[in-house]
Length: 334
Image 1 (cartoon, rainbow, N blue to C red):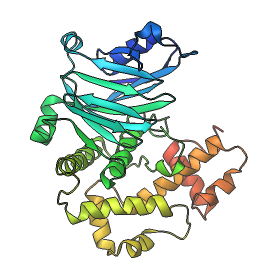
Image 2 (image 1 turned 60 degrees about the vertical axis):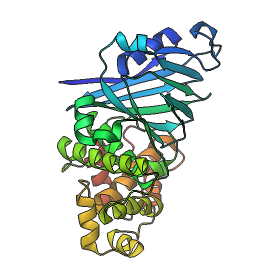
Image 3 (image 1 turned 30 degrees about the vertical axis):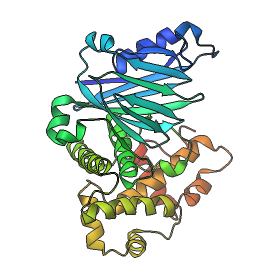
Image 4 (image 1 turned 120 degrees about the vertical axis):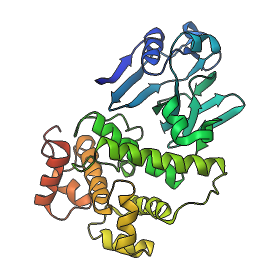
């Protein structure tokens, strides 16, 4: 089954609450100051919800103003949601609370909660965006076991969070088909647009890579950030960070990445292969996504100028790679 809800604009609180029910389950929506929905004084009111569901994966997206969302025992009894929720903060700030655990989220932080338990989420004023991966209870317990006994927080500055954002972007682009708009665009930093959809990716490979990193991230979070990690996992995280920093340099490639990390080409290849990836593809993907973001948002620059600024030194190669990844020529949708 393939059902896709593109982000829907809501101009009233009642409409937004209905949208939240559709993508997340039954929640009460009220102003963050503690009043009811009728007390919300932000005009014009604007919020968005979206849902992507395909190949056994489900992703929910919300963009909202200064609100509080609560799921009580009464709400839980009214629907049949039975999954764990892995929520990544895309922009703005939020307070996520379940049981005795409370976490203050900033961009790229990830909070893991249980939809079958009461929870309360408060969102700061301004544009706040989140994307949530819904993992069915049976699969979550089978893959992660006791790591999901209580809420957990994965900090956005960790290599795990960086890797998870990359994988969520890939999964989202896959679910909306190559080149389609993606909801994982919460901030305006082009350095964060580092994922791509390549022909050799499959739903199974991406799913396994995503859950592999999630398992390591949960183990690390439960150990207070001090869990032992396999050497190649650390290498992959460090490599992603270096690619973020160096991608705009046209002279930077896999060889320079090995030098930067002090790793052999074979070590780097094995590390990326464990995540269904390669250093060359990740570097190309990062450059293409940065170029696409600037093409769509910076009309003051020509496509050629953007290509060179994004790390390309061969325009013919750039045009071929861009069309292959996004399905259109650079500038066609400008």
